[in-house]
Length: 184
Image (cartoon, rainbow, N blue to C red):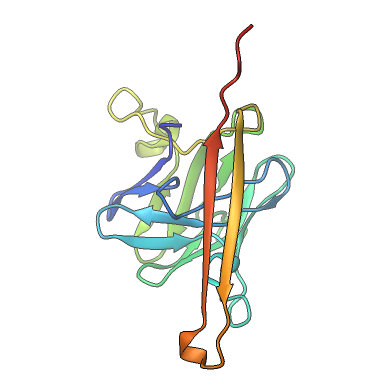
């Protein structure tokens, strides 16, 4: 999928399919997970505390309802908190914003907000001033390839335990394989 970029005027392109980010998007109700990558300065944005193994100290996540309306917080050590819906930060009376996912095609739309970097646009259809369509100028969006694709994802975790804590290590990797459909 070539559509995996959101845009912010302060930091530029934010990649939701960057290698190692392992972004997981539910179909329908559920929690997003993984890390989006800011290309301009090599910083990560975490969509769920599970992605950074920090849930014991700070519990956050971006969640989708059954209709694809996102709520909740993402976190970046460099940029701080990012709200995906005005309901999350109780600012709807000032600015009515949210990010949505079309449940048919997986296309994101709308804006998230960070008090440190401002608005993050998820689709050129509403990326211009006053939510104007700017796709003829800059064709971008974040789009999850829904379950109609022919692929398999394998998550592998390896853990080495040692009597010396400093020698213990855990490594987790995800692999996505596109399956070839045989022709008859």
